[in-house]
Image (cartoon, rainbow, N blue to C red; front, side, top):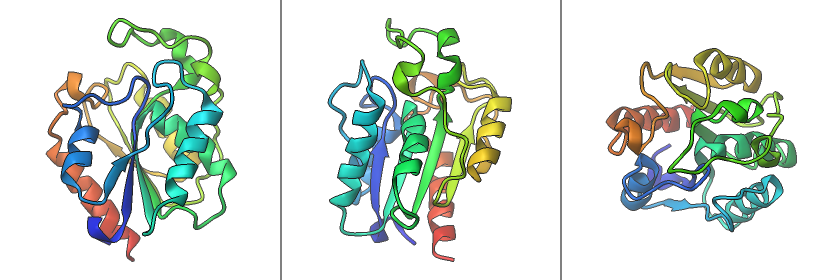
Length: 193
């Protein structure tokens, strides 16, 4: 598959993705990409977030591939239990947020996520009913690499270790993220097989 063959739904994490974030750049440059807009980015509600992703996917006219980052990855994990197999063509999951350990997360832009992952914990550990890749960093303050490996194994995701890449966002130098574009292209090609 190529990007023109699918509807790419960008699923940002908590506080959304700023204009320089790789997700925002992909949204601007990939013709079939659009952001799943949440009602409240700062005080996320799991059911509302999952419902909005499903609602946006239902409106698609081509096969749907999710591109999730951080808390968006947790939302996708919860979504998997509510959709039938074949509803989604795949998911490209980047820098998962380990909501089960949200109490140790650093502040983001002066804010801290309240509660036990704001209803996102515990993370489901059931296999995802669609192909997926999980890109994780060895220096992500929101999810340790060992936990990312555990999640990838549980979900049946192909794990891609990105090395010392922080949270794989604008703050870690991943506004332009050419390696991610290449990896995403390879993932899409694999969906056609």
